[in-house]
Each structure stands twice: as C-alpha cells, then as structure tokens.
Amino acid sequence: MTKIVILTGAGISAESGLGTFRDTDGLWARHRLEDVATPEGFARNPALVHAFYNARRVKAAAADPNAAHQAITRLQAAQNHDVFLITQNVDRLHEKAGSRQVLHMHGVLDGAVCASCGHRWAAPMEMQAGAVCDACKAPSARPDIVWFGEMPYGLDQIESKLRSADVFAAIGTSGQVYPAAGFAAQARGAGAHLVEINLEPSGGAQHFDELRTGPATQMVPAWVDALLAL
Ligand code: BJW
Image 1 (cartoon, rainbow, N blue to C red):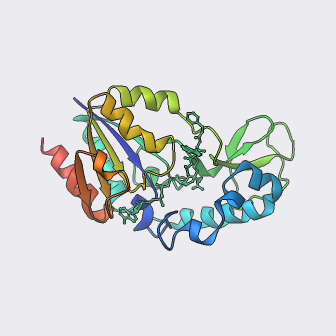
Image 2: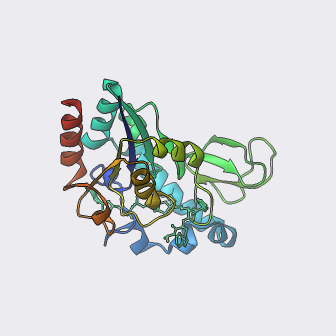
Image 3: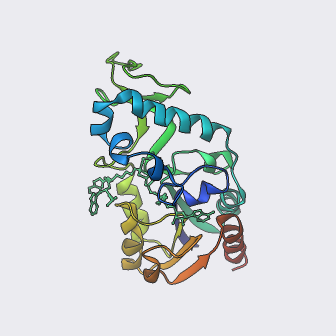
C-alpha cells in the first residue's frame, strides 16, 4: 500500500471563495500579520484580532468545498492507498467534503482555546475580547489558531508519517511558513516522491520531482484519478 502524505494550504480553498495569504489580493495585503496573527498582536488589541477571525469564521461557515477537497476525500475513501492528510487551513472544508481524518496543524476557526488553562471548546460565531473560558472562567478565551511564534499541532505524528512516506504532495501552499515548508525536505530524506500542485510553481518548486501546475479544482482530481488507476 503506497503511503501518501498530503499537505494542503490556502490555495486549495481559493476556488471556494476563501482568500489566500500571500497572493497579491491576499489577506496579508490588507492586514498586518504582526497585528492579527501573533500572540503579541492579540495581547495589544484583542478586539482587532477577534474582528479579523470573526469575519473569517462567518465566511468559512458559508463556504462549500470544491472539486479538489472532494477528490482528496475520494482518494481517502478508496482505501487502496494509505493517505495521511495535513492541512494548514483553518476552514474545515476538508471535513465538509467528507474527509474523516484531517490534521489541522494551524488550528481551526470554529474552535476556541483558553490562553490560561488550555481548555478547548467550540467557538461561537462571534468571539469577544475578554470572553471567559468555559472551564476556568479566566477572561482568556482566544481563537484556537496557531499564530507566528507558536508551536503547530501534531508535529510528532507528522514527523513520523513523513519518515515513512512514499509520496508527499503539497497542494496550494506557497511553502513560505515553517515548519510546514520543511516537510518536503523531510519526506525527501525518507525517499518519498515529491509532488507539488499549485496555481504556479512555488519558490521551492525546483525541489519537487513532479509539478502539476494549474487550479486545484482541475489538477487535484486529475492527480487522484492517476493514483487510483495505479
Ligand atoms: C492556488 C490557487 C488555486 C492560489 N489552485 N493553488 C526564519 C526561518 C524559519 C522559520 C522562521 C523564521 N522566522 C520565523 C520563523 C517561524 C515562523 C515562520 O515560518 N515564519 C516565516 C514567515 C519565515 N513559523 C512559525 O512561527 C510557526 N511556528 C513555529 O515555527 O514554531 C516553532 C517550532 C516549530 C517546529 C519546530 C521547532 C520550533 C507557526 C506558523 C503559524 C502560521 N499561521 C498562519 C496564520 C494562522 C492561521 C490563519 O489565520 O488562517 O497560518 S500564517 C498563514 O500562512 C496561515 C497559513 O496556514 C500559512 C501558510 O500559508 P499558505 O497556506 O501557504 O498560503 P499562501 O497564501 O502563502 O499560499 C497560497 C498558495 O496557493 C500560493 O502559492 C498560490 O499560488 C496558490 N494558489 N490559488 C492552486 N486556485
């Protein structure tokens, strides 16, 4: 059974109407990441950070998965390959497409976490500055999102999967944010075949064995069809 590790980024959800970060019209062109995606920014102005994530939570809740998310679900469901899906996305579109195993390494928009005690619960659609933790009642509720300088989720499990991967596919990610940007090199160290599926070749494209360049809604279903025909 071929062991396939898939890493998805914002590009897979672009055709579902959710913005990417670093494209010319992306989120970082309109918001300073130091203000909205760091623990220091949250400490300075929690209301601004909540407003940023509240708006994105509403948009993500209204978005539908596209043919790329659905193709990955089809690959997982076929069960003739061992597929491990990691996403940097916080939007839940993989689950909406029917994927049952998804590792959200950068957290989820529909989750809240207490900065004091670490308790997690389902986020309301609108979070407020000073909202209290469900468990310890400290006024420390924040979105369950991994910001710059914070440790992403699931790294031990990811590293173990990368060590035994036969195929590693990066889909719709610019490869600019670590540690995810280093996964291809880790998988290569294990002898994996590296596939990049992106609208245009990323900055690290030369390190991949196979480039499938174009919109995810066309490229991912075609890649999945090829894998299922093996
Ligand atoms: C399409 C398409 C279509 C468009 N079809 N494709 C110096 C060196 C190395 C590291 C560091 C450093 N200085 C600081 C660091 C660490 C830092 C980092 O990497 N900084 C870099 C900017 C340099 N990383 C961290 O702090 C991370 N934590 C960490 O390192 O902990 C310490 C540690 C870890 C491990 C071991 C030891 C210590 C945490 C990173 C948290 C990232 N958080 C964010 C925001 C929160 C989530 C949210 O609000 O949604 O996560 S940032 C943002 O970037 C978001 C994304 O998940 C992430 C990646 O972005 P992504 O998905 O790649 O999107 P884009 O927009 O960049 O790219 C989209 C791509 O799609 C493009 O290529 C398009 O072409 C393509 N595309 N339409 C196909 N239709």
